Amino acid sequence: MKVNGKSRVYAIIGNPVDHSLSPVMHNAAFKELRLNSVYVAFTVTSGELKTAILGVKSLGLQGLNITMPHKHAVMNYLDEVDVTAKSVGVVNTVLCDHGKLIGYNTDGSGAISALQENGVYTEEKKMVLLGAGGAAKAIAYQASKDLDELVILNRTPEKAKKLAKSLKSFGAKVKSGTLSQEIVKTEMPTTDILVNATSVGMYPNSGFSPVPSDILHSDLCVMDIIYNPLNTQLAKDARAKGAKVVSGIEMLIYQGAVAFEIWTKLPAPIEVMRKATLNEFKK
Ligand code: ATR
Image (cartoon, rainbow, N blue to C red; front, side, top):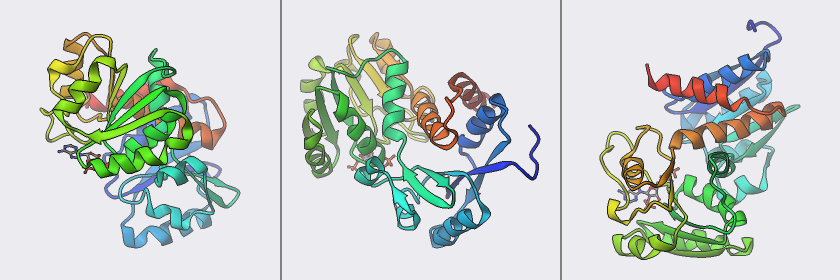
């Protein structure tokens, strides 16, 4: 499709955004479905967030992704925030519905879809989730609706405890603790799914893993939400132990797919989005 006067415009807003993979992923999806839509990136500083969001309304943009540092602050300028995003306190997707801006969080459902679509069933399973930041929270909210047992471990245990407490009403058995070698070692033999939602192992500190490799086992599924590098130290260690690995790029693709479906009400072309995103890493 050619960009013309009727093109629908979508954007990611953040600072920095110039390395975002979302424009490539969503433009590939628009092209595949022959939609007259285009996705661009806007660098917006914190001081300009309010006027940028007002501009989104005036210019009639159709949808947004929100990234650092605006994922929380943007809620102040939206007309509605859905219940999951409100509970998590983080908005990463905005639907512009006839001038009304509605905020969503697609990280949690993206992570669970990435597990399920890679053949990992989340029901009646025990998950150990490392981290208690924004991404961990989103995953915890979604996971605690499906899982039997969730253990949240964080460097700062108070944050894990607070998150666990807020999840009590969802029915899963939720525990929390410190992200320490001893606790991870105690939990791991009975764990089915291990998710790293800390920043340990992210570029430029790529050689690090949040857990020692000797506690990993072949019955585990390990998901690292880090996608830079594509193959984290944790993912390498897990593969070496024969564990199933779902890489961070899968969560990125599925959270994008959920956003795409919120905006267009059409099934997201996952394969095309995956291929376009992975191609960026070859450059
Ligand atoms: P995001 O939005 O990506 O989740 P975040 O909210 O800043 O980012 O959360 C980062 C997570 O990584 C937190 O759980 C953080 O632990 P603290 O709550 O104790 O800060 C965790 N993290 C960051 N650096 C870490 C490190 N060196 N060791 C262990 N955990 C770390």
